[in-house]
Length: 164
Length: 150
Image 1 (tube, each protein chain N blue to C red):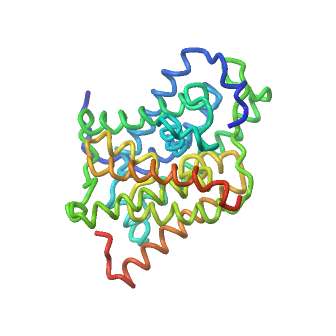
Image 2: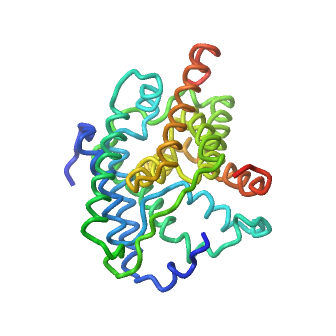
């Protein structure tokens, strides 16, 4: 396998990600989406069937998505160990404090809660949803960025940058 | 997820395709550095256009691709003859409220859901903590769902 040092340029990466929507629909009947996997993970845990949201057959309805996210994980492994890596830091040493790690967990909590309430994330809403001309996905995507940019502004100019 | 019937009796070959599509998706996210904390922070601070260009061109390509697919595949079925599932996401409070909450989480973790998995694949162990948080967040949502506006 050739080792590629340069990052993939945006004009190749973006179209490839976008093309995955019609390709996956045509081949398998499903559009790419990732955050539904968080729901499947909860539904697989014992005891969660007491909650209505987790009462469904994961193997029947969610296996495709579990395989898709396992694939994403393996794609990261492939690039890291077979294609010369990402060529950029993937985490910051400043994160490795108790407060830094707690911040990552709290941020993850917001990602899980927010994407489930919005019923989609950057893949489900921004890429698949907008490709399907869903107006709610346009609104959701704008909100993703408004949330991120606002958090960045508040962090940098009010708290002086608690996020490393 | 009420339409259980469409999931029944899927051809076996779809499962390796989903895995393969995921590998391609994850490899592109990683090699284009979309999973990097550096890129995400530069995006939210408007310091460079890279992430906007990746996401923007993905959106445009996806729109054109799906429009062509709908035009040339009027049956709206996939290659196995089963209906393509265009997930309907109606307007509700969570589109805005959940969207904003996710955006804040995206900034604090520097990872949206796809990159969380890709980061784990690269051996970035801190991503396990983000994933644990995301699972907990999804559980919290499922628990609170009856009390949240939709």
